[in-house]
Image 1 (cartoon, each protein chain N blue to C red):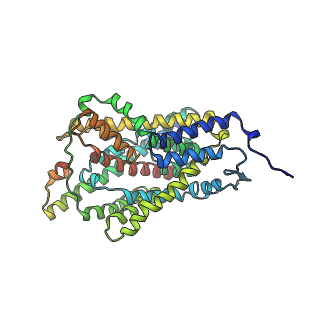
Image 2 (image 1 turned 120 degrees about the vertical axis):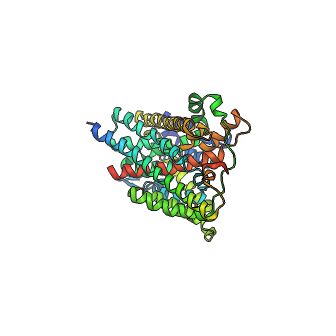
Image 3 (image 1 turned 90 degrees about the vertical axis):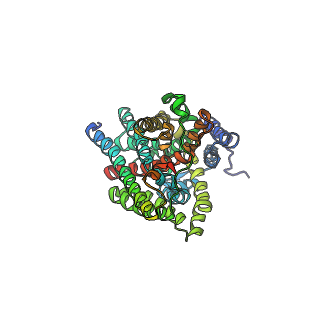
Length: 52
Length: 372
């Protein structure tokens, strides 16, 4: 007998957690880029968006 | 004089012949079509070997592996040694530069895990247990080592079919993904131009990322440590600038050795008696659904990001959010060039592609944390 409640819990929690973990990494990289660009003065924030 | 000598001819049955045809198809795709030959040729040959009767290469006696390939498969593959080591090598091969330069592509790597959860429910509907459904669903991430690692833990009896399905779909990304991408995008969207040059990423950023990345991910999802830990370690070897010898060994010789062992033993895990069962064929069906849905989810988030972003974003790069590195990124590059010959999307697609590897490993870690 399938425990559908548990299955929904796994799927919802799993998918959201993947987004949260990768989302946190996104913010870390964004801030890291911002700080490093400020220190080196090579690129501004726009550079981080990929405009080169 | 002949004693107990016996040829294999008398033991051949129709199932072996079907498996030979499938093995020939894998070898043909690898050699003649050059579709991921490093994977398809060893898998196809392993499949052929194990379906030559009386060879005994994949024999077990009382649950203990006796044949050569059975030993390799049991101790190294199902024993969860090779998959994390492959992650080490992948880390040493991966350039996070495009992801660091354009971190929003992390979100595309997350969206492309949707197929994993979608197929989880379909598998449950069709009578698979929750552990089996999770192991089947992870095929949608299109990451062979992760699929093997997870199914060895959650559903070891399905390891053979899941491994074959995951590796086959990774290799067949150029055939599976284009129809899904084309169905969800207009030619105008596929032709959206993206600046080919991403910003320069400093060595310092490249060194910091694997260290911060492993701390954050493993603290949040501890069970992802074997895969993510090895992946980030391999990447640190690559970018540190002082461990070039180790990085070179990891991304060349060691990767080749692991691919050899994995390919031939995974292929050998498919004897006709196991492969030609409705359940196995259904796993293959679910795997392709998972892969297609993951591709679609990545493209749809790409469309959304393009709609809200100030800078144009070609939605096709979302399809590379599955972890078939670099096959998916190459598919996006090819379709991008077809729609607009001035477009070079490869570097843009590599961002979601490597994010997808991390996303699938995280998804597997969550499953293991909840069920393992």
